[in-house]
Length: 184
Length: 376
Image (cartoon, rainbow over all chains, first blue to last red; front, side, top):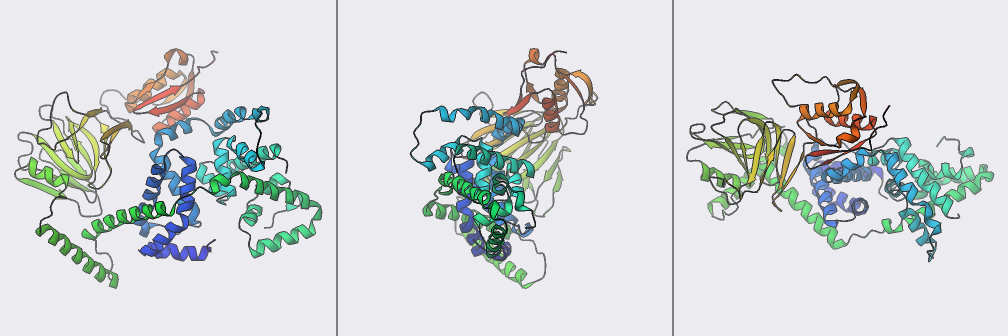
């Protein structure tokens, strides 16, 4: 984990046109951007690459006008998501018309019967994976951001375009559901 | 960390930023904080440990995500692609370098600029001219004696043509036309981003060449974005009607007739032409604006128990968009609202929310999904 102070220096070097600093920022964050991008649009790796390309080239063009982000990783993930949604606008509009709550309830109903299935789970990890896959997509995204990318609720809220409380609720509901299913 | 954690349940812990921050990226201070806290609150240790195990379980379940693998090769390839795009951009900006402040950097910049100029000049003189731009090709093909304006400033420039049409030229954009413009035809050739306000003349259509596209209009206001190095060409219509088609062979007279691939655009519609796949993608502009019309006065968008169908008709009239809905389903729906200050999208969202409907935009159409309203 790189220290925030170094991150700032690196960013400022990049802003002054240092291509090496820029490359270093890319190397530090591209893997996380890739996995986040792939989790949003798993169908096309090429599309995710295009979007990452666009985010970084735009950074380069605008570098002198940018402010130093508090959290570079969050800043890059947010830029990536904005870019992806921009290119997928048609799909995004369908989302907008459904309130988040509606969307979650849609999923909620379908995921109850899980224990009625006769699946034999090989081990605990498979079970948890299967359970997570049954969560509404927004809850899945929220817990990935919270428990893997270590984004705080303000950042998750921004990435999911909801308020802070809703972001916290998404994570809370997902974890509560998992807890009721797996014995801790 | 001044929160009172003594009443925290498992659920509170696993959704607490500070608690999670510690488990994901422990620091010396967070370590000592929690050790100390656990020592003082031994009766809460069970909750705390359960929360910890729950986090670990979730992380275990997210393992597939965490281990999404990006190969070193792919990482390197993408980096190269990014750097080469940047190099192109650097070259382009250094050609039209703006002198800003007096410093050593400026001297270096000017020197670099001169070097770039020389290298461009050399390439020009020693042949190898196959990368001539479409814009230049068009220019020599279309006009005998040319008038050309290029905007090398950082502000939007305005050009007035002999017929009174005005053109806004964005930074880095250029336009050329014949000295005989308006005598036999009205043809312009552009590169970059422009907004064209064309004076109506039914006898003489106004024709715009922009990269691979030709846009034909009678009189209207529209926008063309056709940068040399961008992947798409975009045409957006503000008012009037335009037809856009592909100029496949870069000819002087765009083939008229049946075989053309192209689209007709109405106000608040745009088309994006992908230069690679050569596909037209027509859709609604992101933020539709009211269309000016001389005759009818604009509806006030203030409604009291108005049938929602008439509200939709107002939207269609003012914004020139097509809404698709089932009339019979919406017959009983009514709306009471004041929507005069909202944008088009806001209006639509509010209307749909209040009658329990949703909408989606497909191509240039807006489709209203509703299960109807209960009659009163």
